[in-house]
Image (cartoon, rainbow, N blue to C red):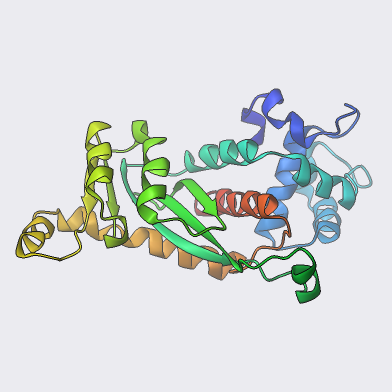
Length: 259
């Protein structure tokens, strides 16, 4: 996946001086680290003993980057790099254009309480909204925030930037907003969003929704549960922007694991 991206896209992972390892090799090791839930030191030691990994990276024992080099590569890479890799990883799975959207939360309390007080961090969780294709559960896109924004504000951002790949979008009542439905229709996407019941006609609106397609919304809940079982419910990075990148990296690893 990393090799398919342009050199320019992955240049951020390489040494700025131009004498380090290729960016895609850093990406492979970072994906492997997340897949194996390892520390930087551990993944370098393990990768050196894996014949297939050495063959793919064209590296011999003793030629792998230092753990600190891999850590710096992750810090250098922007969110754009991880989004591109996430998109590439989703292409490994079959897609039918019928998507679902839902939010989950990741814990930020891996750091010590002293560190949290020192940086005056009060938000303890990150709200993450996943856009999932219901064919095989591929994560197409995501949105992270420490401010817990209204779902009706996040839904359009995530859905419309993927409008070309969507035929329908299923969501629960938290995304109930007429303007959101209109935006989806204008983009050629069929909205499958339950109405909150305030009047008898809301029951009628809900009765008209395709139950089979709407029922596939549970795919997002399955994805959320699977990710937290496999990769944990807390992020390891300390800074909010690195935490966002880590969650995007986890989503990409999840897609690869399902392929």
